Image (cartoon, rainbow, N blue to C red):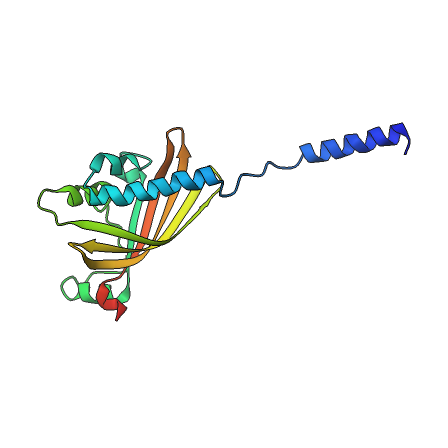
Length: 176
């Protein structure tokens, strides 16, 4: 190959690789570890009734900036309809948000609450992430409800923060 052709070949190869889009680090171990710490802090802050830690996990201290939405299964909806005929599977309930949840959990008269996570899956590109898992909520050691929970997180200047939480909610009776 002549020196001119060799130079042209090197130039084309160099130019073509520099025009390739940047590839995000998929599930980089550092990001996955940091997100696992968020999951554990969420879990332990409920057990320890630690409102400051819990609230610090979220993108905003304004609940309206964080999606917090449950979906009830048919058995649960049917049971609720016995005393609230207007009940439906999905209800937008602004008063039900992460601040209300932790306030209820940390209230002096509240019973012991634990959320158990199983089969946690994390997917991230280093800027956004999703976390999903099966869960059970235990009240005084007894299962109150269970389902599937999914979070979205954003990587802010202050680290990973939860920006949305959605979950299905099933009563133990609907597992029979």
